[in-house]
Image (cartoon, rainbow over all chains, first blue to last red; front, side, top):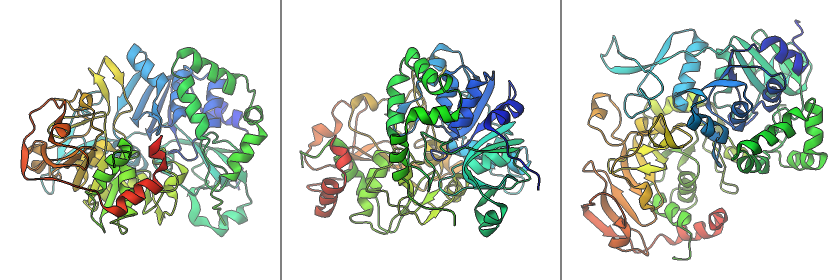
Length: 296
Length: 245
């Protein structure tokens, strides 16, 4: 067995380079907040972030100044409102962006996963999205003559993923909502993962069908309970909806966002300090909200 | 009836569009509420699909904040991924889609991207998400909008999700919006432009078109809906407490 286990700061330090294109995993569920916060702590620069539907982690990474470009289908605070850092950056013209749709982003990642330059689709031939921030070429099907949009491959340098469990060989097991997490991870050159817990390889072998990323593709994996807070992990803890609401009001002003980042990122030396600040009481409440569905 | 909040009346009006047994691709918020209301009243056999990949779930006890929220999976029969459900959509296997947006125009074009110009917007919004994809690909599209004249414009600032278009048949896309539902009225796109086809309980014709920026014609089958179904109203009152905020 090749041991892929490492600490989270070593993973980020070694594998995230300034200027990289980063796929941020987690479609509402298992959002890799701890990995994202570590990227901010380490002061990485000039990153391009991509995924289909974003969570506030994306907005925080914009507000923290580590991001120079975003490639997305939806950018906001799901169910609550706008991404305030994103909105400010767009209105001030300080952020480059490519705006697609959720399906287009999934097809872009899927094309890279399959190793083809594009995938054909019927979307993006009507409306204003094609041509606004992105150039979408078309092709006539060589078999039927139908006109189709060519959705270009997007191969991220690094994927950030959080999941329930893995062995130290990096066989990543995940249940619950996926969205485009596995597609985006498998499309990427490197895959960095945090998991709620390490298990023995014998445990992985009991349910290999829930292994979504195989060990040979995983670059490195760190054990980090609560690594997806304030998002949720199926079977482990519920979503901290209050945190998302509080972010919405704080991030409205630049100063509020800076305070938020100071409190949750810079003032916490590491993830242990972060969970301590969130507090045992709150974590216990979130634990109690969990669905209880487990990988057996 | 009039004591029901706008969001509950909008859900009641839109739930009428759904037929039992249909497969339904739903957005969060009003669309999800309408689909759940239908499922718990006249259409128990509808299958709800969320873009996060969740299939045939029933999140009525805690309406999800997003398509990836924990409660979306409540009662799910399958959790697939985004690729799987968008593939079903493109292959024409989904009967009906429900969408809302910030602006709508008489052709059923929807805007959820920017207010103002694209490159120097007055208000930057969240963007398409799956809305463009649903509007292009779903067999029948139902649009839900609270009756707010500012949202009903002659021409949307940005077409995120395309409405009726003669180009659809060339591109082998389904015909797009079938109806536009507000808490006050139903508009039909049969003629290509939103025309008034029904008035919802508690409103009159003047209310239905109040403040709309375009001249609204009536469809030949125009009617007044005198009341919502008893079961629907009971469900709206008992199960949708979150709409009473």
